[in-house]
Image (cartoon, rainbow, N blue to C red; front, side):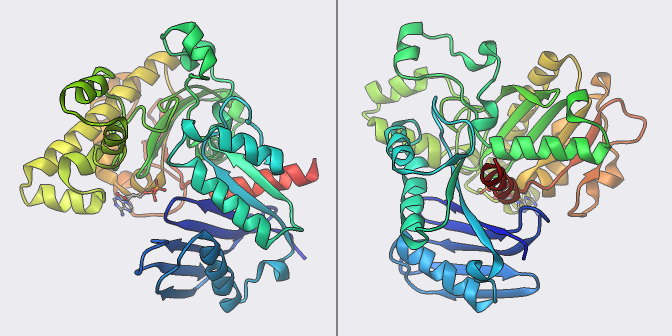
Length: 397
Ligand code: ADP
């Protein structure tokens, strides 16, 4: 029987889960439990052409995992009947210590708990998910896969903030980068799509989902990425501001009477495209722009402006890019964002084929003309498969 890995991505109010065969790459079932702790919790699961869902209060993460198992059983995808070999946990921040997929033990949990201040929104729910899953499946190896791992060896010039060196050292302040599993997976897929070795390519990967980040990758190794100490730096995102003048923080604290928590919450949850345009979903944002909504237009313009600024900066770092790849919800689906991000860049060797760009295809594809010096691709990301494969490597080591 083929072995499987249960991949868990535990957020503060949701648990995403997927049962994956790492060796064939097949996803057996893919589900989510959302709005944990609310009366209107929702759980759904897709397995092939079968979809099941249920609503009603799911009190906490422990209950969420129970519901996940019930749904898996309902569609005939009980992990234990599919050679469950490991549980893979997405952990956002590995801090200075963790940069390889690592077997989870009590010491790892204790250390990741110590790292919580570096990722207050992300690491605590991930650890909660790990603890609940270890209790439910004590005899199965649990593996942590860190979002920061791929960027561990960023060149010092890219990883270092120009702040007081001693303070940075003492408090582990550096640019860690996030979405690493996706950037690594997509850059490898881009090379495979082109039929060349990753070592031969200079790439820019644009991961544009609710969270968004860019990376520049040379010869398979990242040389720059837009997120930093936390996943707040860089691009304008669904609800996060991305880059701001750090002076804004002290100004609001001193003058507007906002606490650090207020400011952090504002920058994380009430900024970005939603903060400016009142909407997080790009499909709705486009509809609003069509109907003349000026706030939506400004949100879109700021989003695109920042994206172009980063693409330009990364082209300067690379000299030129062999490949630019769009991925994640917006990057894979929004032809207008792709067009506006890259328009007017023929001087840099970058062109889009409008017909290819407008195609609603869902598979990996080229959207630049054959003759353009830079190949532009759309490649669906698959962080769950990448996590499952990382777990399999740990087991095989
Ligand atoms: P995350 O994993 O960071 O939560 P995703 O990668 O799933 O985010 O991206 C979600 C976002 O993708 C949605 O908020 C929406 O803006 C965008 N999106 C999804 N489908 C489409 C589409 N067909 N057209 C435009 N944008 C889309």
